[in-house]
Image (cartoon, rainbow, N blue to C red; front, top):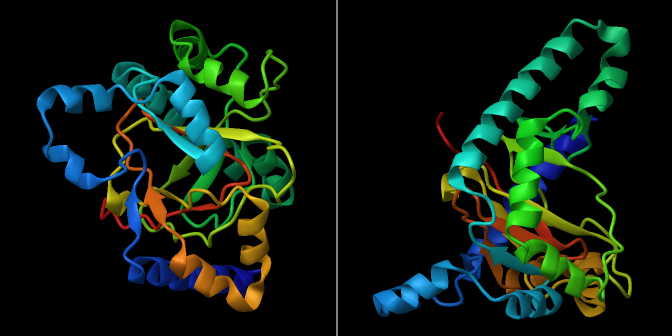
Length: 266
């Protein structure tokens, strides 16, 4: 519905102004930008990211944590090319299927995503995809940081299911999404999502914005109080996931977030 899309787009713009007015927008993984002026040795330690225990604790408390370098830049670049080729093939297949089958064929290749204008969630089949298999081996086996954090997050053991494997692509011109959680609040997180950057993400590209510590019942109650939602967003600190290629943001699906507007000219 075009009216609903327009309303959501305008809502995203309003929320961006509200959150910027508070002056609380930071960078994911940077507690204080002034720390950049510390000694080189401390900076090198920071680039390595937190330990497994620290990252798991941050994930639990803040609902989101940054993980640096869980995928090599070279693998990220190769995987990005593979994904763009798959998207081109998907668009070609859909356009050749005829109008009657467009919607059904779209769902073969893409998952739902909020505000689809210049934004898509491309499904990635694992079977037969050696590039993707190599990347997952690098992420989960060669480095066990992510898998170790997830084991702690789910209470130990390895009883976790890969629910979706996809590439979220935002092109120039995609609008900012309204702030939202992926799941309503419940006692335990039903889902954890990992966004891995396949290229360096800058502010004009519309990085994901997270509201730390909003994975709680109290935060959801304030968010769901519609007359006071603007005040809640205006007073809530937020951070942008300005990731380098191969870095990741790992978050609890109850944590509030939104995709930023992609204002790149290319």
